[in-house]
Length: 385
Image (cartoon, rainbow, N blue to C red; front, side):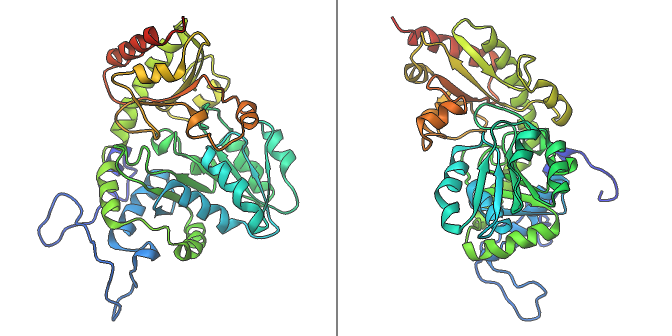
C-alpha cells in the first residue's frame, strides 16, 4: 500500500496501526508499561520521550494525514502550541502572531513571553501586508490559525508560507478547526501544523490531547524541548485516540454537510444578525476557502439579535449542549465571551469582533431537522419582552 497514494479513510483506518503478531487482533494492542528494557535495544523507550509503541505508531497516522514526514503527540492542544513556540523562539527573538486566535493561545503569549524575553506583534488584520509589516530583523516565527476561533476568518496559507520562506522564518498553524480532512497546510508550504486533538481527532468529548506534524528535523527540534517539559500523553489515551481517528474522515464529512445546511438556515432567520461560516457566499473569505480548503469545515458562529437573551437561549436548548469544548459527534454551543475568550479584556474581545451576542456552534452528526427544531424552539423561549 505504501507505493501508491491511499485515500483519507484508508489512512484513518490503517496507518499507524500496531500489528498484533501474537493473536492477530483487529485493533492495535495497548502497551501500558512505563518501563522498557534497554539492553540490546535500538530504541530506548520512555513515556516522557514520546516514543512508547502506541505513541510512536499513532504519530505516523497523524503525519500521513497531514502529508508530513513526522508527527508527535501531546497531553493537550496548548501543550503542543507552547512546545512549538518555545522550540523556535528564544530570548531576544520576535514572533508575528495573527490577531484572531484562540483565547488560550493568546493568553499564553501575553502572560509568558515577556518572562522568556520573547517579543511579539499581533497583526492588525489578516491581509498578507499586515503580516509583512510586523516582521522585524529578529522575527523567527509566524503563527496563524485558520479558520480562526471563533469567527472562522481565513488566512492565505500559500501567501503566508511564501512570506515566511522569503525571510527565513518558521511558519506554524493551528489547524484544529479544519482538520487534515478539509485542509493540508504543509502541502501549501506551512512548516509546522498543530492540533488540539481533543477536538476532531478525538471526536467523542472524552480525550484530552494535542498533536503536531512537520519535517523530521522540525519534529526533532520540538522533541528536544518537549521531552524536558513533560507534556506526553498517556498510552491509554493514545490508544483511545487511535480508535477515534479511524472514523475521523467519516465524522468530519458528516458534520461538515450538516454545518453547511445549518449555516444557510441561520443566515435566513430574522432573529440572527450575522452568520460566520466560510461556506456561505456572504463570508468575506469564501473565495479563499474554495481555493485552500476541501469543503468548509463543521464549525460556525452566529450573532443573535439584541431581541434575544443569549444565556436564556442556551438554557432553552434541549438537544444541542451548551458545552465548553467542540468537535464531538454531538452538537454544542458556547458564548466565547464567557469561555474561550473570557481571559481577554472587553476591549480586546470587541476589537476582534467577539460580541456578547456571539455564539459558537460546533455542528454534530444529528439529524439536520432535529437541530433546526431545537434552535427554533430555543429562540421562541428566549425572546425579550
